[in-house]
Image 1: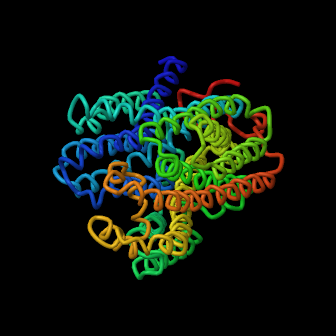
Image 2: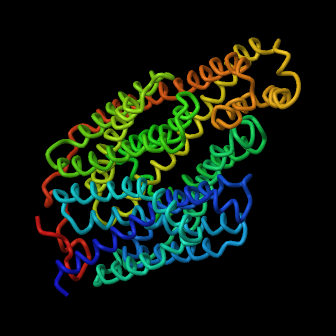
Length: 537
Protein backbone atom coordinates (compact mmCIF):
# COMPACT_ATOMS: atom_id res chain seq x y z
CA UNK A 1 0.00 0.00 0.00
CA UNK A 2 1.17 3.52 -0.80
CA UNK A 3 2.65 4.94 2.41
CA UNK A 4 0.76 8.24 2.02
CA UNK A 5 -2.55 6.36 1.80
CA UNK A 6 -1.52 4.24 4.77
CA UNK A 7 -0.79 7.36 6.78
CA UNK A 8 -4.20 8.83 5.86
CA UNK A 9 -5.94 5.64 7.00
CA UNK A 10 -3.94 5.74 10.22
CA UNK A 11 -4.84 9.39 10.87
CA UNK A 12 -8.51 8.60 10.24
CA UNK A 13 -8.38 5.92 12.92
CA UNK A 14 -6.56 8.20 15.34
CA UNK A 15 -9.09 11.00 14.88
CA UNK A 16 -12.04 8.64 15.36
CA UNK A 17 -10.51 6.99 18.42
CA UNK A 18 -9.46 10.28 20.00
CA UNK A 19 -12.80 11.95 19.37
CA UNK A 20 -15.02 9.19 20.73
CA UNK A 21 -12.87 8.39 23.76
CA UNK A 22 -12.95 12.08 24.76
CA UNK A 23 -16.60 12.46 23.73
CA UNK A 24 -17.55 9.71 26.16
CA UNK A 25 -16.41 11.88 29.06
CA UNK A 26 -19.04 14.55 28.24
CA UNK A 27 -21.89 12.79 26.46
CA UNK A 28 -22.89 10.77 29.53
CA UNK A 29 -23.61 13.79 31.71
CA UNK A 30 -26.65 14.88 29.71
CA UNK A 31 -28.11 11.38 29.84
CA UNK A 32 -27.61 10.87 33.58
CA UNK A 33 -31.02 12.20 34.72
CA UNK A 34 -32.73 9.69 32.39
CA UNK A 35 -30.38 6.90 33.49
CA UNK A 36 -31.09 7.62 37.17
CA UNK A 37 -34.81 7.67 36.44
CA UNK A 38 -34.57 4.11 35.10
CA UNK A 39 -31.77 2.57 37.19
CA UNK A 40 -31.99 4.61 40.41
CA UNK A 41 -28.83 5.09 42.48
CA UNK A 42 -28.80 8.87 42.87
CA UNK A 43 -26.58 8.56 45.94
CA UNK A 44 -23.74 6.97 43.94
CA UNK A 45 -24.22 9.11 40.83
CA UNK A 46 -20.79 10.78 41.00
CA UNK A 47 -19.05 7.41 40.76
CA UNK A 48 -20.13 7.07 37.13
CA UNK A 49 -17.62 9.82 36.29
CA UNK A 50 -15.15 9.16 39.12
CA UNK A 51 -14.50 5.51 38.25
CA UNK A 52 -13.80 6.39 34.62
CA UNK A 53 -11.27 8.99 35.73
CA UNK A 54 -9.65 6.59 38.19
CA UNK A 55 -9.24 3.86 35.61
CA UNK A 56 -8.06 6.04 32.73
CA UNK A 57 -5.57 7.99 34.84
CA UNK A 58 -4.08 4.89 36.45
CA UNK A 59 -3.60 2.95 33.24
CA UNK A 60 -2.16 5.77 31.06
CA UNK A 61 1.56 5.45 31.98
CA UNK A 62 1.34 1.66 31.92
CA UNK A 63 -0.16 1.72 28.42
CA UNK A 64 2.58 4.06 27.25
CA UNK A 65 5.27 1.75 28.56
CA UNK A 66 3.70 -1.36 27.02
CA UNK A 67 3.47 0.48 23.70
CA UNK A 68 7.20 1.19 23.93
CA UNK A 69 7.86 -2.51 24.54
CA UNK A 70 5.33 -4.29 22.32
CA UNK A 71 4.65 -1.66 19.67
CA UNK A 72 1.83 0.83 19.16
CA UNK A 73 -0.60 -1.23 17.07
CA UNK A 74 -1.26 -4.13 19.43
CA UNK A 75 -1.69 -1.90 22.49
CA UNK A 76 -3.84 0.76 20.76
CA UNK A 77 -6.15 -1.77 19.12
CA UNK A 78 -6.46 -3.58 22.46
CA UNK A 79 -7.47 -0.25 24.03
CA UNK A 80 -10.18 0.26 21.42
CA UNK A 81 -11.52 -3.27 21.95
CA UNK A 82 -11.59 -2.82 25.73
CA UNK A 83 -13.36 0.52 25.30
CA UNK A 84 -15.96 -1.04 22.97
CA UNK A 85 -16.48 -3.97 25.33
CA UNK A 86 -17.03 -1.59 28.24
CA UNK A 87 -19.41 0.51 26.12
CA UNK A 88 -21.51 -2.51 25.23
CA UNK A 89 -21.71 -3.59 28.87
CA UNK A 90 -22.67 -0.05 29.95
CA UNK A 91 -25.55 -0.11 27.48
CA UNK A 92 -26.71 -3.44 28.95
CA UNK A 93 -26.55 -2.27 32.59
CA UNK A 94 -29.55 -3.16 34.73
CA UNK A 95 -28.60 -1.12 37.81
CA UNK A 96 -26.28 1.70 38.81
CA UNK A 97 -23.69 -0.61 40.38
CA UNK A 98 -23.27 -2.48 37.10
CA UNK A 99 -22.98 0.80 35.20
CA UNK A 100 -20.22 2.01 37.51
CA UNK A 101 -18.23 -1.23 37.15
CA UNK A 102 -18.60 -1.20 33.37
CA UNK A 103 -17.60 2.47 33.19
CA UNK A 104 -14.36 1.40 34.90
CA UNK A 105 -13.73 -1.04 32.04
CA UNK A 106 -14.43 1.79 29.59
CA UNK A 107 -11.96 3.97 31.46
CA UNK A 108 -9.19 1.39 31.02
CA UNK A 109 -9.73 1.49 27.26
CA UNK A 110 -9.91 5.28 27.21
CA UNK A 111 -6.73 5.54 29.27
CA UNK A 112 -4.92 3.48 26.64
CA UNK A 113 -6.30 5.32 23.61
CA UNK A 114 -5.90 8.99 24.55
CA UNK A 115 -2.11 9.14 25.17
CA UNK A 116 -1.19 6.63 22.46
CA UNK A 117 -2.96 8.71 19.80
CA UNK A 118 -0.61 11.59 20.61
CA UNK A 119 2.36 9.20 20.76
CA UNK A 120 1.65 7.84 17.27
CA UNK A 121 1.34 11.35 15.87
CA UNK A 122 4.79 12.00 17.31
CA UNK A 123 6.02 8.84 15.56
CA UNK A 124 4.74 9.53 12.05
CA UNK A 125 5.60 13.22 11.76
CA UNK A 126 8.97 14.94 12.19
CA UNK A 127 9.27 17.57 14.93
CA UNK A 128 8.56 20.50 12.63
CA UNK A 129 5.17 19.10 11.59
CA UNK A 130 4.00 17.62 14.86
CA UNK A 131 2.69 20.95 16.12
CA UNK A 132 -0.08 21.20 13.54
CA UNK A 133 -1.36 17.69 14.22
CA UNK A 134 -0.93 17.82 17.99
CA UNK A 135 -2.89 21.09 17.94
CA UNK A 136 -5.67 19.44 15.95
CA UNK A 137 -5.75 16.51 18.38
CA UNK A 138 -6.06 18.96 21.25
CA UNK A 139 -8.84 20.74 19.37
CA UNK A 140 -10.72 17.43 19.06
CA UNK A 141 -10.86 17.25 22.85
CA UNK A 142 -12.43 20.72 22.94
CA UNK A 143 -14.90 19.94 20.17
CA UNK A 144 -16.04 16.81 21.97
CA UNK A 145 -16.72 18.89 25.09
CA UNK A 146 -19.15 21.03 23.07
CA UNK A 147 -20.82 18.33 20.99
CA UNK A 148 -21.02 15.69 23.74
CA UNK A 149 -23.87 17.28 25.71
CA UNK A 150 -25.73 18.08 22.48
CA UNK A 151 -25.45 14.53 21.13
CA UNK A 152 -26.34 13.05 24.52
CA UNK A 153 -29.41 15.27 24.79
CA UNK A 154 -30.59 14.37 21.28
CA UNK A 155 -30.17 10.64 21.95
CA UNK A 156 -32.17 10.61 25.20
CA UNK A 157 -34.90 12.73 23.60
CA UNK A 158 -35.28 10.56 20.51
CA UNK A 159 -34.13 7.09 21.61
CA UNK A 160 -33.11 5.15 24.69
CA UNK A 161 -30.21 6.38 26.85
CA UNK A 162 -28.45 3.09 26.12
CA UNK A 163 -27.48 4.42 22.69
CA UNK A 164 -25.22 6.92 24.45
CA UNK A 165 -22.94 3.90 24.88
CA UNK A 166 -23.91 1.83 21.84
CA UNK A 167 -22.98 4.72 19.51
CA UNK A 168 -19.31 3.95 20.26
CA UNK A 169 -19.54 0.51 18.67
CA UNK A 170 -19.61 1.23 14.88
CA UNK A 171 -17.07 4.03 15.17
CA UNK A 172 -14.86 1.88 17.37
CA UNK A 173 -14.86 -0.90 14.78
CA UNK A 174 -13.91 1.59 12.05
CA UNK A 175 -11.18 3.13 14.23
CA UNK A 176 -9.73 -0.30 15.13
CA UNK A 177 -9.64 -1.37 11.48
CA UNK A 178 -8.00 1.90 10.44
CA UNK A 179 -5.31 1.67 13.14
CA UNK A 180 -4.64 -1.98 12.32
CA UNK A 181 -4.17 -1.23 8.62
CA UNK A 182 -2.40 2.08 9.17
CA UNK A 183 0.25 0.56 11.43
CA UNK A 184 0.81 -2.50 9.23
CA UNK A 185 4.48 -3.36 9.18
CA UNK A 186 5.24 -2.01 12.60
CA UNK A 187 7.78 -3.99 14.58
CA UNK A 188 8.08 -4.36 18.32
CA UNK A 189 10.55 -1.75 19.53
CA UNK A 190 12.26 -4.25 21.81
CA UNK A 191 12.89 -7.90 21.02
CA UNK A 192 13.13 -8.95 24.66
CA UNK A 193 9.97 -8.22 26.65
CA UNK A 194 10.18 -7.79 30.42
CA UNK A 195 6.99 -6.37 31.91
CA UNK A 196 7.30 -4.68 35.28
CA UNK A 197 4.25 -6.18 37.00
CA UNK A 198 5.26 -4.98 40.48
CA UNK A 199 5.71 -1.43 39.21
CA UNK A 200 2.34 -1.52 37.43
CA UNK A 201 0.54 -2.78 40.55
CA UNK A 202 2.12 -0.30 42.98
CA UNK A 203 1.54 2.64 40.59
CA UNK A 204 -2.15 1.79 40.05
CA UNK A 205 -2.65 1.26 43.79
CA UNK A 206 -0.92 4.55 44.64
CA UNK A 207 -2.86 6.62 42.09
CA UNK A 208 -6.20 4.98 42.87
CA UNK A 209 -5.75 5.56 46.62
CA UNK A 210 -4.78 9.20 46.08
CA UNK A 211 -7.67 9.93 43.70
CA UNK A 212 -10.18 8.22 45.97
CA UNK A 213 -8.95 10.21 48.94
CA UNK A 214 -9.11 13.52 47.07
CA UNK A 215 -12.50 12.70 45.56
CA UNK A 216 -14.21 11.56 48.78
CA UNK A 217 -12.51 13.97 51.19
CA UNK A 218 -14.57 16.91 52.38
CA UNK A 219 -17.67 15.56 50.66
CA UNK A 220 -18.43 11.97 51.62
CA UNK A 221 -16.07 11.95 54.62
CA UNK A 222 -14.38 14.71 56.66
CA UNK A 223 -10.75 15.36 55.72
CA UNK A 224 -9.59 14.23 59.17
CA UNK A 225 -11.65 11.02 59.13
CA UNK A 226 -10.09 7.57 59.25
CA UNK A 227 -11.09 6.56 55.67
CA UNK A 228 -9.51 9.67 54.10
CA UNK A 229 -6.37 9.60 56.24
CA UNK A 230 -6.10 5.88 55.53
CA UNK A 231 -6.38 6.39 51.76
CA UNK A 232 -3.76 9.15 51.73
CA UNK A 233 -1.44 7.06 53.90
CA UNK A 234 -1.96 4.05 51.61
CA UNK A 235 -1.15 6.23 48.61
CA UNK A 236 2.11 7.41 50.18
CA UNK A 237 3.01 3.83 51.08
CA UNK A 238 2.33 2.55 47.56
CA UNK A 239 4.24 5.47 46.00
CA UNK A 240 7.20 4.64 48.23
CA UNK A 241 6.95 1.00 47.18
CA UNK A 242 6.71 2.08 43.53
CA UNK A 243 9.93 4.12 43.80
CA UNK A 244 11.67 1.19 45.49
CA UNK A 245 10.52 -1.23 42.79
CA UNK A 246 11.35 1.07 39.86
CA UNK A 247 14.91 1.62 41.07
CA UNK A 248 15.49 -2.13 40.84
CA UNK A 249 13.35 -3.10 37.84
CA UNK A 250 15.13 -4.26 34.69
CA UNK A 251 12.64 -2.41 32.49
CA UNK A 252 10.56 -0.09 34.73
CA UNK A 253 7.02 1.07 33.86
CA UNK A 254 7.91 4.70 34.60
CA UNK A 255 11.66 5.04 34.82
CA UNK A 256 12.76 7.48 37.48
CA UNK A 257 15.54 8.49 35.11
CA UNK A 258 12.90 10.36 33.08
CA UNK A 259 12.71 12.92 35.87
CA UNK A 260 16.42 13.70 35.39
CA UNK A 261 15.40 15.30 32.10
CA UNK A 262 14.59 18.93 32.88
CA UNK A 263 12.09 19.23 30.02
CA UNK A 264 10.16 16.20 31.28
CA UNK A 265 10.01 17.40 34.89
CA UNK A 266 9.15 21.03 34.14
CA UNK A 267 6.62 20.21 31.43
CA UNK A 268 4.69 17.78 33.61
CA UNK A 269 4.74 20.25 36.51
CA UNK A 270 3.09 22.79 34.22
CA UNK A 271 0.60 20.17 33.00
CA UNK A 272 -0.30 19.40 36.61
CA UNK A 273 -0.95 23.09 37.36
CA UNK A 274 -2.88 23.57 34.13
CA UNK A 275 -5.16 20.67 35.01
CA UNK A 276 -5.65 22.13 38.48
CA UNK A 277 -6.84 25.49 37.16
CA UNK A 278 -8.80 24.16 34.19
CA UNK A 279 -11.05 21.85 36.15
CA UNK A 280 -11.35 24.35 38.97
CA UNK A 281 -13.02 26.66 36.45
CA UNK A 282 -15.22 24.01 34.91
CA UNK A 283 -16.48 22.83 38.30
CA UNK A 284 -17.11 26.14 40.07
CA UNK A 285 -18.03 28.72 37.43
CA UNK A 286 -21.51 27.24 36.74
CA UNK A 287 -22.12 27.23 40.50
CA UNK A 288 -21.35 30.96 40.63
CA UNK A 289 -23.44 31.82 37.58
CA UNK A 290 -26.50 29.91 38.76
CA UNK A 291 -26.25 30.56 42.49
CA UNK A 292 -25.08 34.20 42.57
CA UNK A 293 -26.15 35.82 39.30
CA UNK A 294 -29.31 33.70 39.04
CA UNK A 295 -28.72 32.40 35.52
CA UNK A 296 -30.59 29.30 34.44
CA UNK A 297 -28.63 26.09 33.97
CA UNK A 298 -28.92 26.17 30.18
CA UNK A 299 -27.69 29.75 30.00
CA UNK A 300 -24.75 29.11 32.33
CA UNK A 301 -23.82 26.07 30.27
CA UNK A 302 -23.80 28.28 27.18
CA UNK A 303 -21.19 30.50 28.79
CA UNK A 304 -18.84 27.53 29.18
CA UNK A 305 -18.93 26.82 25.42
CA UNK A 306 -16.83 29.91 24.51
CA UNK A 307 -14.08 28.66 26.81
CA UNK A 308 -13.94 25.44 24.82
CA UNK A 309 -13.94 27.43 21.57
CA UNK A 310 -11.00 29.41 22.93
CA UNK A 311 -9.21 26.14 23.71
CA UNK A 312 -9.85 24.80 20.19
CA UNK A 313 -8.76 27.92 18.29
CA UNK A 314 -5.66 28.70 20.37
CA UNK A 315 -4.65 25.02 20.34
CA UNK A 316 -4.69 24.98 16.53
CA UNK A 317 -2.86 28.31 16.24
CA UNK A 318 -0.17 27.47 18.81
CA UNK A 319 0.31 24.05 17.19
CA UNK A 320 1.13 25.76 13.90
CA UNK A 321 3.44 28.33 15.48
CA UNK A 322 5.30 26.08 17.87
CA UNK A 323 8.30 25.40 15.67
CA UNK A 324 9.06 29.16 15.53
CA UNK A 325 9.38 29.78 19.26
CA UNK A 326 10.78 28.24 22.41
CA UNK A 327 8.40 25.99 24.33
CA UNK A 328 8.50 28.25 27.36
CA UNK A 329 6.89 31.07 25.34
CA UNK A 330 3.68 29.04 25.05
CA UNK A 331 3.79 27.90 28.67
CA UNK A 332 4.38 31.39 30.07
CA UNK A 333 1.84 33.16 27.84
CA UNK A 334 -0.74 30.42 28.36
CA UNK A 335 -0.44 30.54 32.12
CA UNK A 336 -0.57 34.35 32.14
CA UNK A 337 -3.76 34.28 30.04
CA UNK A 338 -5.21 31.82 32.54
CA UNK A 339 -4.15 34.02 35.47
CA UNK A 340 -5.79 37.08 33.89
CA UNK A 341 -9.00 35.14 33.24
CA UNK A 342 -9.09 33.80 36.81
CA UNK A 343 -8.50 37.31 38.18
CA UNK A 344 -11.49 38.66 36.27
CA UNK A 345 -13.59 35.71 37.45
CA UNK A 346 -12.63 36.53 41.04
CA UNK A 347 -14.00 40.05 40.54
CA UNK A 348 -17.47 38.98 39.38
CA UNK A 349 -20.58 40.02 41.30
CA UNK A 350 -24.35 39.69 40.99
CA UNK A 351 -24.31 42.42 38.32
CA UNK A 352 -21.88 40.60 36.05
CA UNK A 353 -23.41 40.23 32.59
CA UNK A 354 -23.34 37.15 30.39
CA UNK A 355 -21.08 38.92 27.88
CA UNK A 356 -18.56 39.82 30.57
CA UNK A 357 -18.45 36.24 31.84
CA UNK A 358 -17.91 35.01 28.27
CA UNK A 359 -14.90 37.30 27.84
CA UNK A 360 -13.41 35.98 31.07
CA UNK A 361 -13.76 32.30 30.19
CA UNK A 362 -12.40 32.89 26.66
CA UNK A 363 -9.21 34.22 28.27
CA UNK A 364 -8.92 31.04 30.33
CA UNK A 365 -9.66 28.88 27.29
CA UNK A 366 -7.04 30.62 25.15
CA UNK A 367 -4.46 30.05 27.87
CA UNK A 368 -5.25 26.35 28.11
CA UNK A 369 -5.18 25.98 24.32
CA UNK A 370 -1.72 27.58 24.11
CA UNK A 371 -0.32 25.09 26.58
CA UNK A 372 -1.84 21.77 25.47
CA UNK A 373 0.10 21.15 22.21
CA UNK A 374 3.36 22.37 23.79
CA UNK A 375 2.99 19.86 26.65
CA UNK A 376 3.06 16.90 24.30
CA UNK A 377 5.54 18.18 21.73
CA UNK A 378 8.13 19.34 24.27
CA UNK A 379 8.19 15.94 25.97
CA UNK A 380 8.31 14.06 22.66
CA UNK A 381 11.19 16.22 21.47
CA UNK A 382 13.21 15.38 24.58
CA UNK A 383 13.22 11.58 24.16
CA UNK A 384 14.01 8.99 21.49
CA UNK A 385 11.23 6.86 20.01
CA UNK A 386 11.78 3.91 22.36
CA UNK A 387 10.81 6.12 25.32
CA UNK A 388 8.23 8.30 23.58
CA UNK A 389 5.17 6.26 24.54
CA UNK A 390 5.69 6.41 28.29
CA UNK A 391 6.91 10.02 28.09
CA UNK A 392 3.85 11.15 26.14
CA UNK A 393 1.38 9.27 28.34
CA UNK A 394 2.93 10.96 31.36
CA UNK A 395 1.57 14.33 30.22
CA UNK A 396 -2.02 13.05 30.44
CA UNK A 397 -1.25 11.29 33.71
CA UNK A 398 0.01 14.41 35.49
CA UNK A 399 -2.71 16.61 33.97
CA UNK A 400 -5.39 14.23 35.26
CA UNK A 401 -3.81 14.11 38.72
CA UNK A 402 -3.74 17.92 38.69
CA UNK A 403 -7.42 18.07 37.73
CA UNK A 404 -8.41 15.83 40.63
CA UNK A 405 -6.16 17.73 43.01
CA UNK A 406 -7.68 21.02 41.84
CA UNK A 407 -11.25 19.88 42.33
CA UNK A 408 -10.43 18.61 45.82
CA UNK A 409 -8.39 21.61 46.98
CA UNK A 410 -10.68 24.25 45.50
CA UNK A 411 -13.67 22.40 46.93
CA UNK A 412 -12.05 22.40 50.36
CA UNK A 413 -11.34 26.14 50.07
CA UNK A 414 -14.93 26.88 49.12
CA UNK A 415 -16.32 24.67 51.87
CA UNK A 416 -14.15 26.19 54.59
CA UNK A 417 -14.80 29.79 53.58
CA UNK A 418 -18.54 29.45 52.98
CA UNK A 419 -19.19 27.58 56.24
CA UNK A 420 -17.24 30.23 58.14
CA UNK A 421 -19.31 33.05 56.60
CA UNK A 422 -22.64 31.30 57.09
CA UNK A 423 -22.00 30.51 60.74
CA UNK A 424 -20.53 33.86 61.70
CA UNK A 425 -22.46 36.28 59.51
CA UNK A 426 -25.71 34.79 58.19
CA UNK A 427 -27.02 32.73 61.10
CA UNK A 428 -26.65 35.52 63.70
CA UNK A 429 -28.71 37.82 61.47
CA UNK A 430 -31.63 35.43 61.03
CA UNK A 431 -31.75 33.49 64.28
CA UNK A 432 -34.35 35.88 65.77
CA UNK A 433 -36.88 35.43 62.94
CA UNK A 434 -39.84 33.47 64.35
CA UNK A 435 -40.96 32.13 60.95
CA UNK A 436 -37.69 30.21 60.69
CA UNK A 437 -38.44 28.11 63.76
CA UNK A 438 -41.38 26.10 62.41
CA UNK A 439 -42.75 24.40 59.31
CA UNK A 440 -40.71 23.93 56.14
CA UNK A 441 -38.37 26.78 57.05
CA UNK A 442 -37.83 25.32 60.51
CA UNK A 443 -36.71 21.94 59.15
CA UNK A 444 -34.52 23.71 56.60
CA UNK A 445 -32.78 25.72 59.31
CA UNK A 446 -32.37 22.69 61.54
CA UNK A 447 -30.55 20.92 58.73
CA UNK A 448 -28.51 24.05 57.97
CA UNK A 449 -26.99 24.12 61.46
CA UNK A 450 -25.44 20.69 60.91
CA UNK A 451 -24.82 21.21 57.17
CA UNK A 452 -24.62 24.98 56.54
CA UNK A 453 -24.06 24.59 52.80
CA UNK A 454 -27.52 23.04 52.41
CA UNK A 455 -28.71 26.67 52.49
CA UNK A 456 -27.34 27.06 48.97
CA UNK A 457 -29.89 24.59 47.67
CA UNK A 458 -32.50 27.34 47.59
CA UNK A 459 -30.28 29.37 45.26
CA UNK A 460 -29.83 26.42 42.90
CA UNK A 461 -33.50 25.36 43.00
CA UNK A 462 -35.57 28.46 42.16
CA UNK A 463 -38.84 26.61 42.86
CA UNK A 464 -37.92 26.36 46.52
CA UNK A 465 -37.81 30.15 46.78
CA UNK A 466 -41.55 30.32 46.07
CA UNK A 467 -42.20 28.54 49.38
CA UNK A 468 -40.53 31.31 51.39
CA UNK A 469 -42.37 34.58 52.18
CA UNK A 470 -41.05 37.61 50.26
CA UNK A 471 -40.15 39.55 53.40
CA UNK A 472 -38.05 36.62 54.65
CA UNK A 473 -36.33 36.29 51.29
CA UNK A 474 -35.23 39.92 51.46
CA UNK A 475 -33.40 39.11 54.68
CA UNK A 476 -31.94 35.73 53.70
CA UNK A 477 -30.98 36.03 50.02
CA UNK A 478 -28.48 38.94 50.03
CA UNK A 479 -26.14 37.50 52.70
CA UNK A 480 -26.59 33.98 51.33
CA UNK A 481 -25.56 35.06 47.83
CA UNK A 482 -22.74 37.11 49.31
CA UNK A 483 -21.46 34.07 51.21
CA UNK A 484 -21.43 31.91 48.08
CA UNK A 485 -19.87 34.69 45.99
CA UNK A 486 -17.17 35.41 48.55
CA UNK A 487 -16.16 31.76 48.89
CA UNK A 488 -16.00 31.31 45.11
CA UNK A 489 -14.04 34.55 44.72
CA UNK A 490 -11.42 32.97 46.97
CA UNK A 491 -11.40 29.85 44.77
CA UNK A 492 -10.79 31.86 41.60
CA UNK A 493 -8.23 34.11 43.29
CA UNK A 494 -6.32 31.03 44.46
CA UNK A 495 -6.34 29.82 40.86
CA UNK A 496 -4.58 33.07 39.88
CA UNK A 497 -1.58 32.08 41.98
CA UNK A 498 -1.66 28.52 40.62
CA UNK A 499 -1.42 29.94 37.08
CA UNK A 500 1.34 32.39 38.04
CA UNK A 501 3.29 29.52 39.59
CA UNK A 502 2.98 27.69 36.26
CA UNK A 503 4.32 30.73 34.38
CA UNK A 504 7.30 31.00 36.73
CA UNK A 505 8.06 27.30 36.35
CA UNK A 506 7.88 27.75 32.57
CA UNK A 507 10.76 30.22 32.73
CA UNK A 508 12.98 27.41 34.07
CA UNK A 509 12.59 25.46 30.82
CA UNK A 510 15.22 27.65 29.21
CA UNK A 511 15.71 27.66 25.45
CA UNK A 512 14.22 24.22 24.69
CA UNK A 513 12.45 24.16 21.34
CA UNK A 514 11.90 21.97 18.28
CA UNK A 515 15.32 21.41 16.76
CA UNK A 516 16.41 20.09 13.43
CA UNK A 517 14.85 16.63 12.85
CA UNK A 518 18.26 15.00 12.45
CA UNK A 519 19.44 16.53 15.73
CA UNK A 520 16.44 14.98 17.45
CA UNK A 521 17.31 11.62 15.86
CA UNK A 522 13.90 11.13 14.33
CA UNK A 523 15.19 9.45 11.23
CA UNK A 524 12.87 7.16 9.32
CA UNK A 525 14.80 4.00 10.02
CA UNK A 526 14.47 4.49 13.81
CA UNK A 527 10.72 4.28 13.69
CA UNK A 528 10.78 0.50 13.16
CA UNK A 529 8.00 0.68 10.57
CA UNK A 530 8.67 -1.31 7.42
CA UNK A 531 6.44 1.09 5.52
CA UNK A 532 8.40 4.14 6.76
CA UNK A 533 5.36 6.20 7.67
CA UNK A 534 7.32 9.25 8.70
CA UNK A 535 6.51 12.23 6.54
CA UNK A 536 9.63 13.69 5.02
CA UNK A 537 10.53 17.12 6.36
